[in-house]
Image 1 (tube, rainbow, N blue to C red):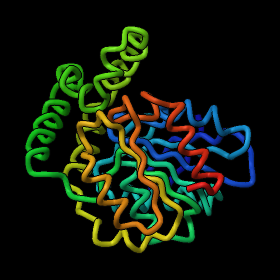
Image 2 (cartoon, rainbow, N blue to C red; image 1 turned 60 degrees about the vertical axis):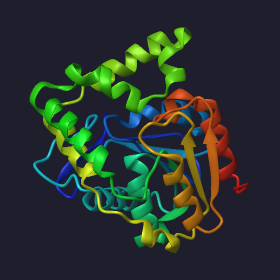
Image 3 (cartoon, rainbow, N blue to C red; image 1 turned 45 degrees about the vertical axis):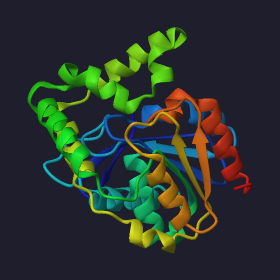
Image 4 (cartoon, helix red, strand yellow; image 1 turned 90 degrees about the horizontal axis):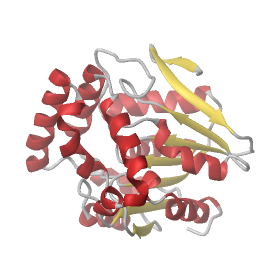
Length: 267
């Protein structure tokens, strides 16, 4: 698999498909670029699809530092520029969307459109910080297997988790969760947990923007999604039925339909 050195880090990436425009896919915490397989299959016949793994996750190197959202945004900006992806359609889930917000504010010329799935512009709540810090500590010391049963309901909605027809898919994603490297994932988690709010700056975003949230998302509230929508002029708010915090996996057809509208200028 291809890797590129960005800001002193070997970052894993893939480019699939061809087209005059590029879609950049940025994954959420605990996952990798694999969460976009359904989207890339749907769009690679018309678009150049660039997906990658953040520091310490997937197949990208574990580093001693640099897991804060500002550094991740700098990494992603450099990746977009180095691989000739600008201006791109940026699709971010959770942490990936938080990175997308920061790039759209500071480097608007790089972003043609912005899809924010399961994303917040606010700091983590005090209650969640305490809970997530405990999970990060346990993951660092013992790995994610010991807390997988507590993490899965945060990452996926009830409809996905109890669906017998998707039992094999659920097992596959539980294994992907457990396979995370202890040190990398603990550092990445703290970068998200300790993030600074950016809500007061997102009114600067001018790119066409989709804000989408699963109606079973336990990590991002409807209020958080509405706050982003209300602050970005002209943005579209969409609620994805039967989806939790990883809608690209849980309800890929609905996500693809929303992305199609965004990419075609109907949002």
